[in-house]
Length: 250
Image (cartoon, rainbow, N blue to C red; front, top):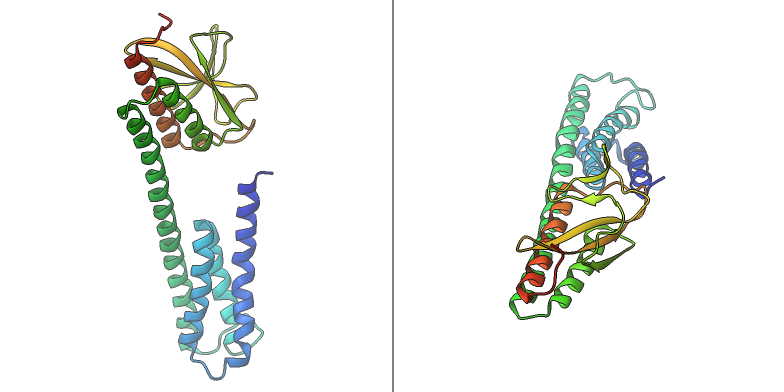
């Protein structure tokens, strides 16, 4: 089972348990707090869960908060029944606000993650460009790209092979797709294959070699954006090799 699935299950469990614990902790203070204040505290618990998990976890936390607010904090206590009309409205508002705020929290977290990811991708491309512009050797550019590919794609390893096309390996294409072509059979991958994957390096219309990617088999492919950045890095390596006028395969 992947770490991502374990994380998702843990967050869903937290979505169920956290509102229960918050409601239980409020029991000694329920006569001194207004229903509105109690509901706001429950909303905070929902937001905390949503900031860690998915939209499903946020929605589940909102439902759990409404249920335990009813059970612990409204009369008759310890029953899923509400006798007071105002408290019914508060419970409904708690559910609605919890759902809305949880979705906003998840969206904000994802936007922040996207900004961090985009910045990292841009940094990789800029680093390669700066190295080439500073007159770095083409071998140095290739080595820089090789290291960047390991982190970018989550690989076990990566090596560069000059000017050979031995074997028929799955290939990371310019459009970001991962394909294997063997005769008339074409296979598209959604997960990393069990063998090395090639990322070809060309420059000025010439083939110079390929990066051989060593992934963790069975893992989902990285995002399309990450794969397109990998292709762009390989193109920068090809441009550096072509500018240096190294020998190539026609």
